[in-house]
Image (cartoon, rainbow, N blue to C red; front, side, top):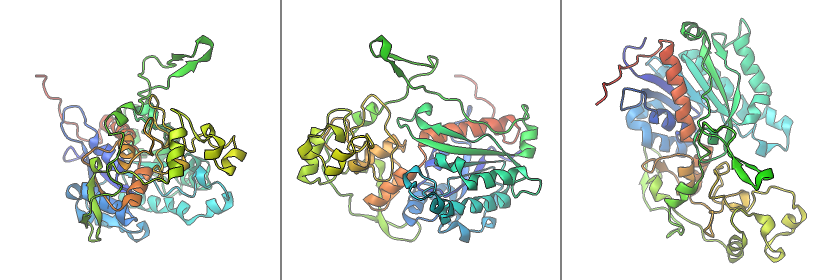
Length: 413
């Protein structure tokens, strides 16, 4: 049992803090603040680490945010007991977008950083840990090795038991985005033994459901899970941002939360900046109808490659559907030639503001770095809403196991 009612977390490969933001946004019954307290974070990219520090430095302590390679980080600097370790080791090697050379992918040095995650888990012995990655991670040799370390009697993670890994769709949890990511949940065996069920940490049940169209009944929408509300669309996101942008540049100011001077910090609400498209690009934007894509362009506005490959990605130069969730927000969401990133009705790509809101970041979240650096942080983040749902599942499980202190419920009224 903890001596207070805080659940201490360490965020590895933290990025700008999507997981941390979600965990901190969770509210347990009977309290007005989050039960989760971050006691350490590691992020190698200085811009992302600076964003993390700008938002969580006062809470965590600047000295506990390591901006550098995880191989150089000593977990002994964390003096507090650690209850939860979060993290998504860099996944570029596993990504389906990098499927050109599978052998090279498996040997990519970024794919062995999970071993550093294991090193930290062994040092800090959290009650549970959460790994987030692309779905292909679950089919990799690295995941098989990771699982083996929990199953072998002499395994490095023999103290832990893995739940069956799953790919979760953020849209199933109220996020206006169909982002699919793999999650691996693990519970320390003594904590599992203390839980009334005798089971380890599991996955949250979906809170929303996809509405499908019954084409046999005049395209009438059908909810296969009527007890759940339908997926959230992006309608409210775009209702809250002007259809036009007034500038292409962020304000000229600088910050240095970790001692390195960078542009910023900028509030999410300041990120409504546009681009200066070439005349041909603007004509293409105007020619694409609602829900359309490159295949709707007349030949004179298309390219030879697009005309040759009509069966390629239907998301290239595509407009977001106003009544559906967004596609996955990636790091180059401001380039419609990279995916379905045109505004639902305006003739422009989505802005950093809109992408950050789709990812669930609040308007008072602070960002450090230039436009490309911030875009990379937004695209690499775990959606805040999905992280908050996972936080609730972690909290409930630890509370039921008697592994955290639960405050008494306040009397109504």
